[in-house]
Amino acid sequence: MNNTVTIVGAGLAGSEAALDLAARGIAVRLIEMRPDHPTAVHHTGDAAELVCSNSLKSTKPDSAAGLLKEELSVLGSPLIEAAKRHSVAAGGALAVDRVRFARDVTAQIQAHPLIALERREATDVASLADGSDAIVLASGPLTSDALSSSLMALTGRDALAFYDAAAPVVMADSIDYEKVFRQSRYEDAAFGGDYLNAPFAKEEYEAFIEALLGAERVIAKDFETRELFQACQPIEEIARAGRDAPRFGTLKPVGLTDPRTGRRPWAALQLRAEDAHGASYNLVGFQTNLTFPEQRRVFRMIPGLEEAEFARYGVMHRNTFIDAPQLLDAGNRLATPQAEEVGVPVYVVGQLAGTEGYCEAIRSGLHGALAVAADLKGIALPPLPTETVYGALLAYATDPATEDYQPMHVNFGLMAPLDPPVRNKRARYQAYADRANAALAEYRAALAEAGLLP
Image 1 (cartoon, rainbow, N blue to C red):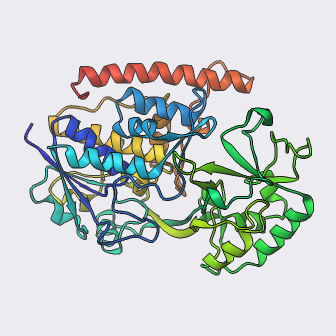
Image 2: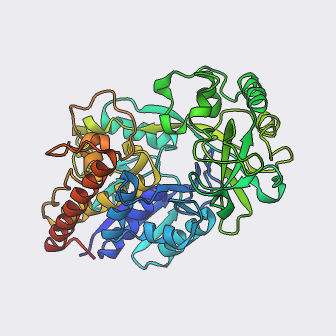
Image 3: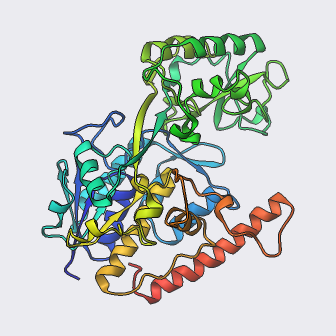
């Protein structure tokens, strides 16, 4: 097959798509503007750099996030295998050493003879058609203004946007281990755990919330709920909804026992290892819009972090995504008259397509690669079963009946009800998982029969 596909963006979705297409014998021109044109949150020019958190979420086989990882593994995702190679302890979640993970993916891309990595900014979609048989836009939520304008011309409408935030990271040797304790939720503290926990007494918590609410913000506005992606709301916005709100969310003490008191703390912050050596820790769920000096002042009020040194401060940025239900078909192909005029098919994958989450971005890149490969072979892409978690998300995200579209993670709420219904929650989730795995096996067989597996 003598085809060339141009991919814009070497993030999770773009890197996955590039490696998947190359594995199928398709040449790839991968365009990445970093490091010459940095973004507000990236620190390197590496492919697949994680900027918000180092956690890829749950690995539980009866959870939606766990099922998504199973899809990626069964379909041969190179990125999910890289994530497993560079995993760090995170209880029941898959978290990675983000530096090693990104370097691994970058090395795979640079070593593949069918992938040409170009370090430049792509500013015009139509100009990418020259020498290409298809275009895949995977430029992510921080798509440059120039490329965003070009894409909007192809959609015939304005971009949608929401605000996203990243949590701070502190150096491990600056934590006061006399005040924090190691334990995963619902595990005996005597046996340790994958998380450090900073316990608040009631008075400490109330003083912290008071300082948090009065701290100076980078973007000085009270956000409307619709402007903030729910999974990445800044901690100060959560507190603004109610002073006890963090205690029932990010700072919930449920399942934890402070070994110093033998009781559950009033509130607790969990810290997760950021790298394989445990040299730094991520403040779990502490996305923030506070200025850097205020983060240093306020977050040092957290017990055990009084002398914390920040390896990275939290940041907040504006994310861009398209109205996928009105613009994309089930193969993530841009279906507008303006896009047809480009001369080659244009696909949009990853967070730019409005699927939220690291593994969702990887899976979107894989799905886009399959759609492109099928198109170039002149065959129909086997339909992705809606009984799978990504199939359910894709059906929602490309259904023209979906209104007021917002980025979405995989979740059981998007899946068709069980017939007959299962009342017990644990049994219901297991039934969803059994149904999803059976559908996934059939889908993989259909891909193999169509000649779409490498």
